[in-house]
Amino acid sequence: MNITLVGFMGTGKTSVAKKLVQIMNMEYISTDELIEKKEGVSINDIFAEKGEFYFRDLEKGIIREISNLDGIVIDAGGGVIIDQENVNNLKSNGIIICLQADPDTILERMKDKKDRPLLNVDDKMAKINELLEKRAAYYQKADYFIDTSNLSIDEVVKRIQGFLKNI
Image 1 (cartoon, rainbow, N blue to C red):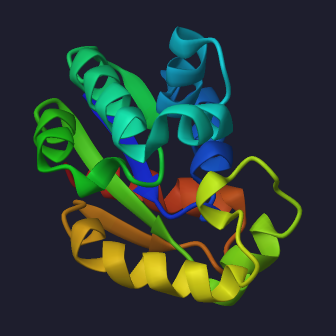
Image 2: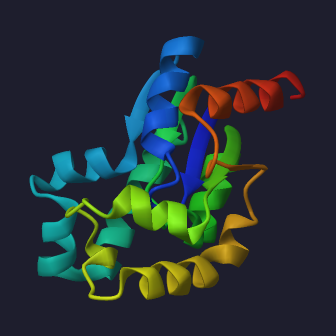
């Protein structure tokens, strides 16, 4: 069984996934890292040179491949859950946990990041709110939800372990 972490940027997917891997003796896979490795350029460059549609197509292929693996924690890009085929593939061999945070927390966590193409705008808070609203229905497709706004990484991992005991 796999554990896929989805959610908006800044909700803690990468930090939580890496901690979960240590504790549960599983393998870690980042969809964004796989895409960058495959393309030989950064996500920012892919967006700038080839656009979001091209990126999402690459992402779908990666999800198709890794969802057949077993015993992995998947650190999924923020928009993975928008595509129903991705959701179906990820759920075929695991669970999807959506990490959430309030917009102020997201902005605070992302303020110094320059590698987020969707936040390369003047009014970051407006963009965060817009994207959260657009993606809200998609995030509801996850199996479990954790608001990470006021939780430490260890607290989030403990909650995930609690979910796993009920499966």
